[in-house]
Length: 421
Image 1 (cartoon, helix red, strand yellow):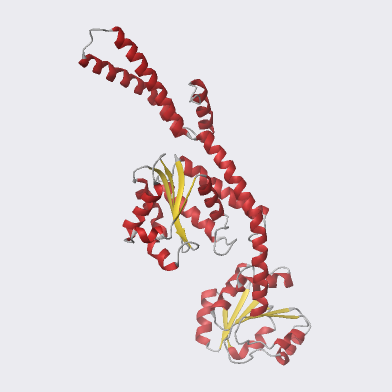
Image 2: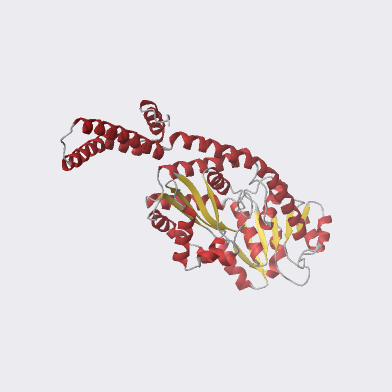
């Protein structure tokens, strides 16, 4: 049998092609079940995200899985096959194993190290398992892939460096305060990036969030969404006395936070540290506040420089992760070579069938007066006997647990000399 992956992703196809062949997340299992009905497909799993549509399949030997899966995608989505062929890739056996290891470890993601893909693969696998589309080989493969992803996260720092501006702001805040547990934050303005940064702060342990905007109605809506407190814009400075972290995305044409007022705030705070993040363009915080003791200000360019350095750091860590994935892929293929039960069963049946035919021919040669009808009856009888004898060990071999399967395969090879040919 062959393990293959056929699909397209952000590296091989533009978004306008990917969206035409995407499947709803909740239908991945149903689609895998349908793929399983294709001739020559033994097991399958469908993974569909915003960046990729990939079909993993265990195929019978000699079957052109690529053309059958492309034909399936073409007919299902009404996209011409020749158009798909310009964008699809196909990997088999060790390359396919390495691919799923890289995908689950986020080495093949648009943003290397992002954590979402692992959950997406787990969901696709769960659905394929529920639909009985994934069998013994894919069960083993996916559990190994999850283990490799964990190993990559544990042994490298691939996910330790922020690669979004909003999250970089949170990471910088952690460096200044060492912990964000129990800290308070203010969101000045209701911009999207500010909202994302606020969500990151809350998930990092910030216990109080104040939201203000020139539109009190917008501030109230956003505060309600984030489970924070809204205040009128005019109360900004008085509220900052109790705020440790302020994120500004006010989109105002001028500075809304100025040094003179922050000096007063710091006096009321008795010099306790404050961290400001200005992600507005044009800037809404006067950069001169950086000259005030215990006040730290970062603007969008500062954050993007941090992100760029972190991306480079992730790339360096990705090299270590690639080594882990490559090593594990080779190890998995070694296991697969030892436990590939289908060719062993085929060899077993072929050997027993050869013995049956040879002994039947010997007997026929001695029975000079046997009729064609009797020959046919004897052939059917001996064939039926062999099938009944083989049924139990073959079924036991197919249904055995992974650790037993290796023992059974090796025993069968040795007892019947199946490696001789």
